[in-house]
Length: 64
Image (cartoon, helix red, strand yellow):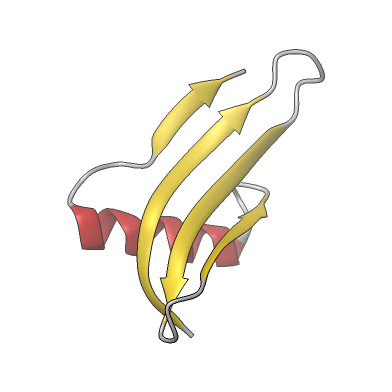
């Protein structure tokens, strides 16, 4: 179970046009992890919203 989110970003890869959302987190046992998927996926939307609530700032947008 996720205890808190630590980072969130949406990357657009200019070489292939792919866009992927990433949310990094720490679980209740102290283990770190990262969940990734399409930014419009309901699960990713929920994780990104949680990040914004917990940190008071929007998810970062990156171009690679």
